[in-house]
Image (tube, rainbow, N blue to C red):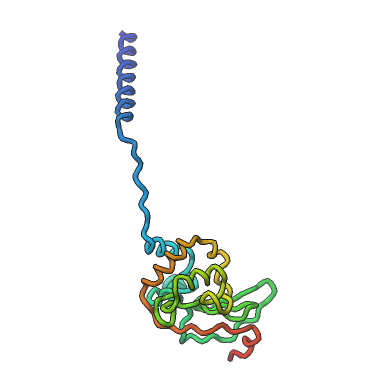
Length: 194
């Protein structure tokens, strides 16, 4: 009897394995097709993952400390926020940031993050070519003064033309914020701030 039961159990197990194998071979094995994002979706993804909000969106104090003020999303340094004299740098320190994380002080002087919204005080007059050239060459509007730290344009210039076009296309769709960002302050003029 024991041998008969083992033979029956082994046979049933083999039949089950064969049935599962045959069924899995009959199942279609088509992989889902990848979804290609639109340029606007790609631009939004790149802006949200490339730390653009970290500097270009002013912060406000929230319950857990500084947080992006999305009512002023990507509008740069607030025109009404005047900078005070920066702290004296001690050995081992290279830069300091304002309370809104939109003004930065270092050996280059004081830089202010740009308004990236499609307002006339921001990117309204910019063309796609100007934007790409600015990122590729590190020049404001693609031709004038240098883009100053902490803007990591030397990293972003490695993005593809398609990615830079997608970023620019997305920036043209966000709500415009009227905000005239001040010009940078040269190192020799930092001491004149009162």
